[in-house]
Image 1 (tube, rainbow, N blue to C red):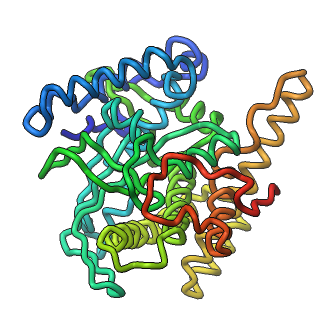
Image 2 (cartoon, rainbow, N blue to C red; image 1 turned 120 degrees about the vertical axis):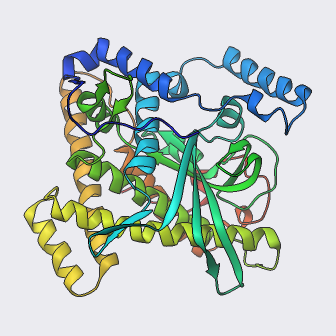
Length: 400
């Protein structure tokens, strides 16, 4: 079952202004998001797992919730707003490039489904939400002759901007002992249109936006009065920027995971991991090109940046155009963080975190990828239990 669709305007909606969002609006959003969540339960997997297994997993969740209080997972507003906005973007906004336009017609390149995970997989396997991409024509990795017609992607959603905590999130993929390639986790309670049960291996990505970005999303969201679902304004200029940031983070992590694959590619599990990452790379390439063009067409960027994008596109340099946007957003995001931090300091308030969340994720991925190619992370490249994060002392990361 997919999440409820959202409205893109029209009657029957009320705008949530900033003051409402800070007060009753937050509660209204939380209630609306709860209505859109919970499309799976452990009971739905009674034909796959024994009653004892399901009861044990439920006890695991209760034990965790009993002893862990506070923290990001219990902060309903930012975590759930971001998580649901992303899920709706995947399902309704074609964020992953599943739909394109050719000769005035809409063409579906691949089918997309998305679900929030059950609490067990959220806690145990560090995945908040997952997406399934189903291809009408198999994608082939010609180097090894492997093909794939479906790939599932797991996402850990965060607003954290601590370098140390983001490093842990990006390099620790689950809390179990399963042996998998770097970058991969698993789902025990997986479901799509065709199957449900365990998903033994899927790439897992940490995606993050700043609290300022999330607050802006909340303050411009709309609640449909007739069914209580949420319209996040997926096609607004602000969310085009958020879309680009998220896609760039996924792409950066995907490139890191490719760099961290073992040199020995003979094993079936490594070849399967490789073709999954290859398929994701193909989708992200197209999705980022579309988003780059939309940002330019909608004038969401300064004129100078748009001119640079158009010049690169005329030369057929799509990757360069994408990099121009990314470098601008990295600079602008950090500039905003620095300005807000200066203002907080002037008021005698503590500065929270080490920089903008998006900036921290991209920088860490680039540093880790460089370290991987330099051979500094070789001990983490094996098919092994990746249940401990890499420490900053293990690689030559330079803080800008």
